[in-house]
Length: 119
Image (tube, rainbow, N blue to C red; front, side, top):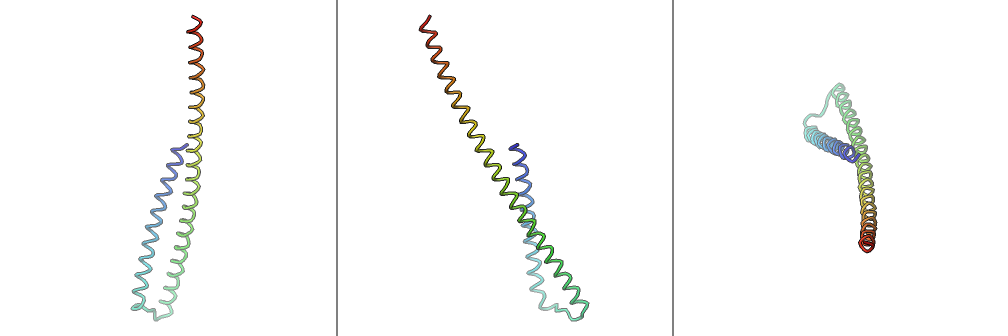
């Protein structure tokens, strides 16, 4: 179960890194467009329409990437919480097992002592 959570967490972290890289690439592309936009001012109605469509497409793409990153962050948080809870449960179980072992060890020692005294 822990391996599955770890595997999912690693997959989400990898997807998150890819999304961040894509976001950086888009940001650089937008910066490039902004720096080039001064020299390439559209003059015809067709060029304006084309640039408007490209801008809308970029906005939609950025919104989708933003949504995907939020979803990925939420999944990361959920998996981290699950991982921590499972770890805490294992630690508690190990502690209980250790206590039970000590009780049984003490019982065994006392019974062994009784047997030695009787013989």
